Length: 336
Image 1 (tube, helix red, strand yellow):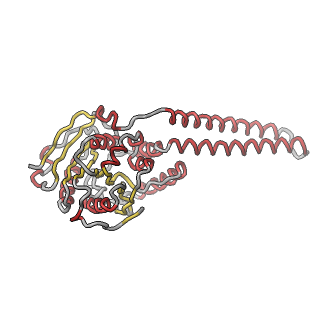
Image 2 (cartoon, one colour):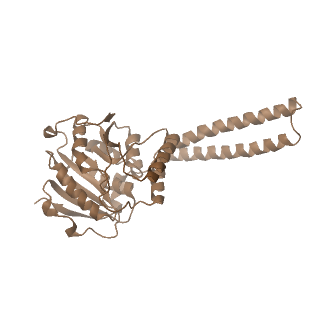
Image 3 (tube, rainbow, N blue to C red):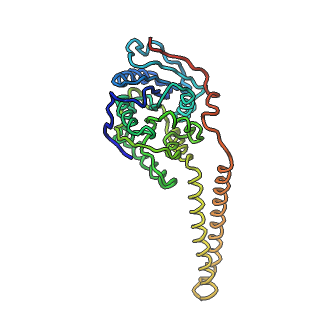
């Protein structure tokens, strides 16, 4: 379902009175300070109580106390920071933050957003208004406009095509979303949440509303994700569909094996029942096809073993052991 307009009067919000905004940060305290100020301004127009949980993904330094003008904050209730023991990556940091938030009983919904400004705080009221219309749905921000370099857009398009071919699905949204707390309490038990939040949404089968929003521009600096990190992230997303991927590999392997066997049969038929075969050609081609057939069978067996292993093993979701990776929790600020 795709939406693009306000569907509810913000002044009459009744279902999501208490919300928590969860955002990861890694060595980008300047952007975080700007985000907090913008979030405070955005929620000032809403009849809600809003708090922020910041997941420090193993930054090299702590945030400086004078970087944020706490005296200018007037709408947020509190800002809590959770410091991870080491840099785990954006998605795993989010998984830990969401698991910790799910353990609290203070919130009706959770808003997930990045801290660099590309998820715009001024869009929070729009997503919450849509959540009021569909309270049992996950509301996600589908991107209608991006500000990325042309090279990034090109490789992102290739990634989307590859993802579609390998999994049969497509993802047109990122982290920016509104999750009802009852839904979150189920999501945090899903192992896929360690790898990719959007893919977890899709695989959970919870209903989703796509809300069309433009992507914002970074507040400051450049992205901390290297090319290698982006590739790892892409593979992590695909790994959420590993069972589907292995089934597709099996089907493709069987089709290729069938074609190879048919080709070998046809070549033998030509050799035995006609005089069209070129001397020495038949044995060479059959040998090459037999080697290819062996390789296809090995790939199929490998995919089958991995599929059965994945189905028989039970991995734990972030809810089980997220606490292990947290070095410290501290209250950064609370409304007087």
